Image 1: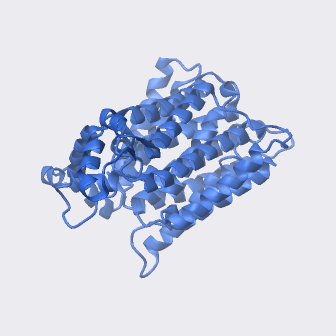
Image 2 (image 1 turned 45 degrees about the vertical axis):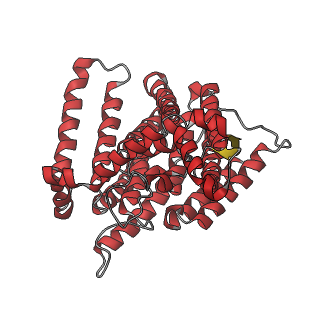
Image 3 (image 1 turned 90 degrees about the vertical axis):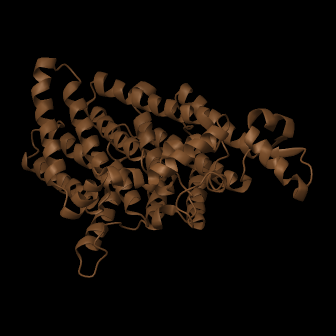
Length: 440
């Protein structure tokens, strides 16, 4: 049963990635339907081994997030809306000459979009729970759970490199994604697993009959896969994708060197060497076109004229208007029109900052809940990395930490987590992180 569930989730994620990251609603609805079928089978009362529940704190935060999304789309008395969201009450009052007097209305400015986003949230939550359950059941094969991520990322990277190098190609690697930044975001979450897995292959225990050449060859093949993924990230010309990738590898290495029984005087020298290596990679790895794009960041004029910064400022004004409950999940685009003073003639449908968009749509309390959920997952990873004696689980947790560090940084300047395939990948990694021994 576990292998069938893993196979179904792998096919679902592959389909989402193949279909432009699942950005088209029909494609993502098909993925949600597949996740729903798998979830029903796993939750069926006739199942011999019931689905394992998550940590109580994580379960509570998930329930609160779902409750907030549900409350936003349910009709509430207008008197309650005046208290919870004065800006929404003002919007309703302005529509009364056309639509008549309101007695009940939803908090969300776009209830239909809010309902779709609620289903997406439930789907990603189920991926988190299913992967965590699989990890607890497949303890003897810890890396099998992340192998699909490595394979899908490798195939995407090959396609991206063909686009970058083939005659008449796109010159920019973007794989099956519409946006190169989201392509880089997906690859940067998968890269740490491709980097750490060969280390585990070399350091695992083998029988005396196993030739030393076999693990060495397997490890070299694994690092070749990692090199292909890294090269594709570089040729996506995504500035923050490149920064986030190097930072995640640095975090991964420093944590690996700094945990365990190693004393500080034994740690600072290899940590310093690793920092120097990553710094040199930042200087020598990027091609000329990426260096040119990075150089634009250093220009003061480019910063003040950057459209993203103006959108962030306008989004902060939107957050100020809906601080407690937000404008509703999926309502950013419609509400942003009132505060948009830049990019005239264009519709600003995303804040290009996942944190700001969550705060705008779910309110500041909603953002704090998401941050708390991320902190709990990171805390469980740290416990495994620093305390467990199970080497395989420690290496996999290190890779999860590197992936979370990469996407956390990249989300500061982009909306990767609003791309369904990338959101599902993050939920997958979160489930892998949560299936650590301390949580079961």
